[in-house]
Image (cartoon, rainbow, N blue to C red):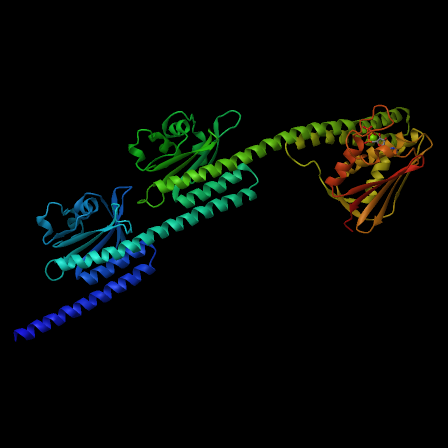
Length: 580
Ligand SMILES: Nc1ncnc2c1ncn2[C@@H]1O[C@H](COP(=O)(O)OP(=O)(O)OP(=O)(O)O)[C@@H](O)[C@H]1O
Ligand SMILES: [Mg+2]
């Protein structure tokens, strides 16, 4: 009878052992395939409860940096997060000391904190709590505690020695998985960081202005570090004032009202030390100015501030506020990422500032250039006005007088527009205003303005339009082009010589031929004819005329060629794509 009892007892034990073995194997397999920390937590708890025959189980991750234990537990449909301080309560005690704690009656133990029971309405009886040490092959080093495994209320009786052994063997399984999981999260984070750096580099090439670029950067930062709001403030490279700002999730108007000395508070410290500064409890940080949060309309709990530096100069400040997840906090990992981002951002900003300065400088020198071309081209219409005013004085016929006066007005308009061009250019606007133009209208205008004057000076003037085509050009610029070429032609001829202007259809283009039968272009300047300051054989020539011509033509998608023979004459050929 006794024998019988012992055998059935043994059989039961055997059965139980085999279930345990199965379960441990199952956990081992499941754990090794689960890399995400949160899923891992849930999985462990489920299996541990089954195996230990416990009512409840909790698996805490120990966060040494923050001095906390945290866990997630599934409660009905909700997922709750629990956080404890290291050293507080049973689990906190285990996380601190690394001891195994096995208590049959919690309420008789001083370390037990009944507050949680009170809150949840649960009645804790027995507790078994076990540390999880970092998995490592190096036995000489003391291993860190990375987790705590806790089970409550053994269903039948209390936790025994063999329960401790079972839980210990699970703890070592879990340690390996946890290690993998942490490695995995780190790897995942690294991949994200690299992606971010790569993305930023790529966006940089797309951004056209510094503002655009900063907006892209701030977007990426808030996304990667997962914060509620961010602010970048840049120092003007000339005045050294902190002025240029971009914001994310902050009221730009409010932020713009801030004056920013860069001398006190967190920012002051960062500017002075050139180092990252952060606080996870801004409210109690003596450096943090409470009015700051009020002014920008944000309840700031966490703040991190990093200098943007070029060499040792602080060119700006990047501030980020409040982790999006309220249980999250700024970690040293975050700061490392923030620092590497900051140096990338600084380099990028430097490139842009240099680019902006260069554009400004280029524009200034270009304005100078443009001024000289305008001054150059003012002379011809000016002379023309003189000519027509002369004619006006002698003319009695009312109709003809009106025509002359119209031309004078046109030429004055033309002069005014040329000066407007310079101003537009200074503002960065293109001075070319292309419209659809009928070729014959262009030639008609040109003849109307200049034929009389040319003839009056004793030259022949001919014009012919052999096409009904349209071209897409700025008509005033076309007049300037023709004017310069005609002026050269007249200067190369003696009175009696003939200037002609003809328009033909030529394949996809309209071809303008501007010819004279003058002295021809000297061989020595043929190669460089269209360069600035190339002049030959005339008093007071600046050598700018044809340089202007070429530039104006190319800005309107045309091209120019020249054929010339000494003592026979010269023909300039100008092509513009035709629209019909
Ligand atoms: N139709 C032409 N016949 C002969 N030589 C020409 C002709 N057009 C230009 N050239 C030569 O090309 C040179 C450059 O012309 P460009 O209009 O650029 O300057 P410029 O006429 O000398 O000076 P500016 O236009 O300021 O009066 C002229 O000095 C002249 O020697
Ligand atoms: Mg000229």
